[in-house]
Image (cartoon, rainbow, N blue to C red):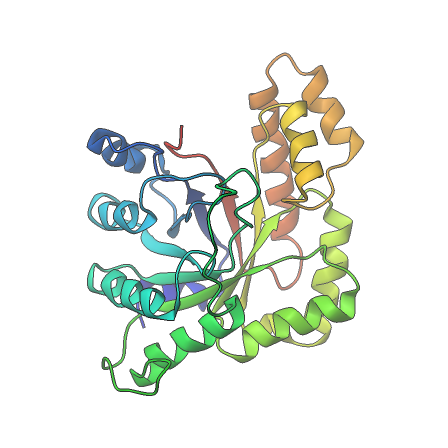
Length: 285
């Protein structure tokens, strides 16, 4: 078990943060990415082209393995790679001391990322988690061939607390946990009661005992940005009170940080929550 695995089962609330790779190819921007990250983080999650075409998440993760003391988690999207590329990149990441793989489907390419692109979608995120767990535990690939001895990698997946009906929501996340997800990172939480309802349902099935549930908080920068997120459904519901605070503040970005900090403090007190993930821009200009 690597450092990330030990942190996940430690019983304490762990701290992670997602960063965006630079949109260009300047090596100085990749180097500067590490300087934006707090030193007390347990892990850094490198996003994989969530909003537009950016520099390689793989390259950014490799750089962060050298420049930061935190564990590095590489996001990998099934949208852009077939199973051959996914397994190949996972092996390469492990060789570079990446400690976790976050298996995601990825936002649809039509969402301002690159509408002209054809998606791979060779396997879905549940199948990707299952494939990664087989590789980690048994060293076998999707075709059953022996590839590697045991890998010290933790395998994670995304969680969407606000998807309804609740029965379908729980079935989706139960599948990810059943095939081996060591942790679930949620979308940004603004509706605390909706998240608490989901966590109550998760805990009623003892799913919180089988994986680490890590909700995300997102520091908003403006009321307009909050409205954009609402329309894109990239996060849970954002209440009118939050939007009013941003609109009426002399410094909306500072107010957004305060709102995120308040939410993080409340989330930590909810039974079953094992950590807090901060969604941030990093050097992604």
